[in-house]
Image (cartoon, rainbow, N blue to C red; front, side, top):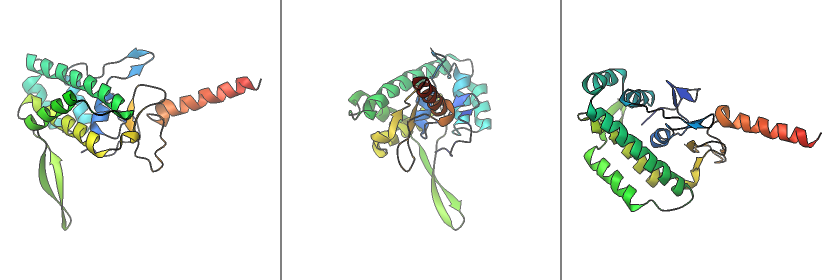
Length: 207
């Protein structure tokens, strides 16, 4: 559903270290300098995140902003996304430790999947055909389609032992490395800092 992230962990002010749409969505409320930071501050930020995640094109974002920006429905949708994100965050934390997905979460995702489904279209790839997922925002709530689909895919297709919270911060990630030993959200954000801190501690011990 989304191409591999570029070299930077940040894209247009958002973090992309999770390797899954739904995990990157959960990571839109990180902690920086000891303070929780809301990255999806309003409907405009929600649309910018969808564009950064390559779920919407710039033209689609501009059209949705013109149609819905500043409306009560846009605010309600943003608040519903906050609620879904926090429910998924708690669920992923529990699931990472081997606990079953709660029935209420399954029910919520099933409602979203039924009301806002992803669609499939054929795309030519040389002499072959590819089945490509897509969604159309006819109603504002259709923005939930890729989030619900990614959540359902995560919980059914991914090994929970490969989904972890960073050893240093609150960010989550799907470890897609061959060895499966990734510990940090990224080397740039936490891995190097942890290594530097460990090195400094060893140097103090040897003094």
